[in-house]
Length: 106
Image (cartoon, rainbow, N blue to C red; front, side, top):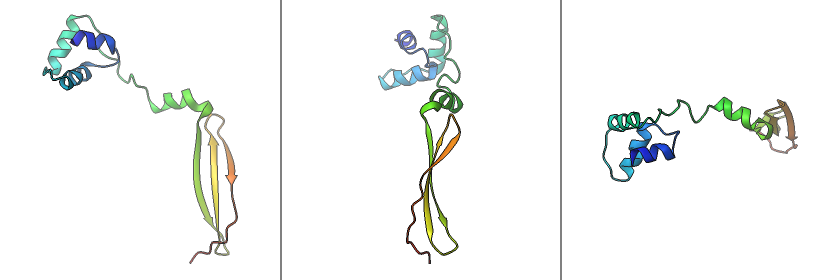
């Protein structure tokens, strides 16, 4: 069962395999799972197999916007609301909305 779980899920290490077995009601130590995987010639899972935030941004930068909503208090005690959108790949900022409001502060 250990070897089958490891072959079907190559990115999972011995601790994840142990956790899956525990969910199925099979009690076995992580050291035992690691030893069985070694005997079955199954290499350990790569470290960082899930990737990093930088890898994610590089892969999805072409379609990933970054947004921010802010407000600016004016000298005449008014308030302007501004929505910024940045294209991550091109690093261009677009101001989508800056409506005037009659909101008074204070």
